[in-house]
Image 1 (cartoon, rainbow, N blue to C red):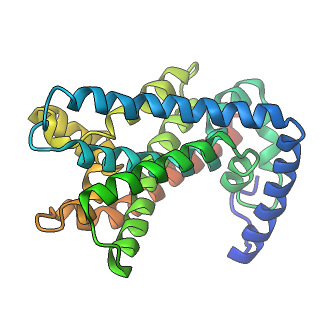
Image 2 (image 1 turned 45 degrees about the horizontal axis):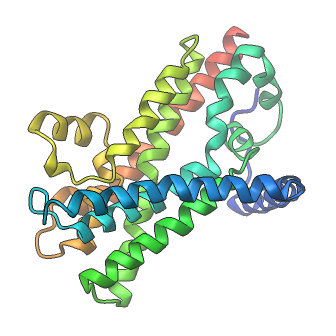
Length: 270
């Protein structure tokens, strides 16, 4: 089995572009499903938006955090989760491919097996999430009067990318457990549910959960730590500045773990 083909970055960009076009053509042949799925995604995220309004109609702040700061993190988290939703959704099907033996078809092509498997599906529902996340972030940004400069916009983009890497890595780890554990779907579900806590600042949790959400299941890096660089520039913790490097390292480890599982699959014929 070829786990890594000796191909350049341009090759993978070109081939992914072709795969994406064909996938869009397939999905757009069912336009009603495209529209309904995106509307459903927007409505589900709107519920979270309304929840903040209801919450802050009774409390002016929560542990020192205002409504617009919380909305900023909420929008930030939605944008950060979009790459996972759009590009890595096929991880949810990995356990079925391994269990049925269909995964073997990915093992004999001269391209990177992780790329080959992940690129097979693009979830259009993520586009609705992206639109709502951008709208929420801009809305909160304006009310917080954050300056719109090259530096603030550049920092936001950089730390959004860093934040995305953390959740992608978490789900890569969770998905790859199927190479060792039968019926590992519950691991995927549990890890995915943790994203619901990413929209809250880590300081509202007690010390134990803050420790867990920072160093064990690092969902605090999906919005809290990276967003502080723009949201509260006068008191940025070291972990915020380090989040791009930590996120990249965490993603690389998850990739290695995923590939290790694929090697096991080839070795056992499971």
